[in-house]
Length: 115
Length: 116
Image (cartoon, chains in turn green, blue):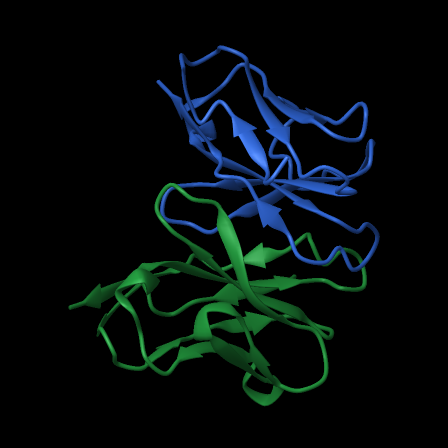
């Protein structure tokens, strides 16, 4: 069975500092990997996704993520955090061979940005 | 519509009541998903429609949960005889394509159900 672990429940960074959110997955085949962001009272918004090809994926809002098969990781990064990035971030894995939309989500990481 | 619309946004039900949650997906989107998000957790898959066909309902927690999408657009998630453990945010998402690669999911803002 597939699973996703986000080890950090809550992260606080200063505005302008770099950010890395960790995601580890367990899946038997080639995964379809996603990062979503959820602001309070809002729906989830897709930041980026990976299926194949270049292991460094660029997304919206200046985010990027790197797929490392050997480490079963798909960490999200941003070089300089803005106050508007404060939100909850979810990593997800989808089984492409059956239905990529039927994703398994991690429990999320809450990001707080200090001024 | 411009986005996925869900109603009601908030619902308080007494234990044992039936509730119905509505999802209006983006016009023309083939795939529709329902997820359940408990407090402090990530969304969990409930069920999936491709047009009007419910292709996967493996995530529905019990036979008290029922979903339909009779005309391939609006969907309703019905919960009968609600229990306290049903309290959660119910998220609807739609996608333009169907089949294996359903593409990007567009999520609604969710319906928060509280069962007293």
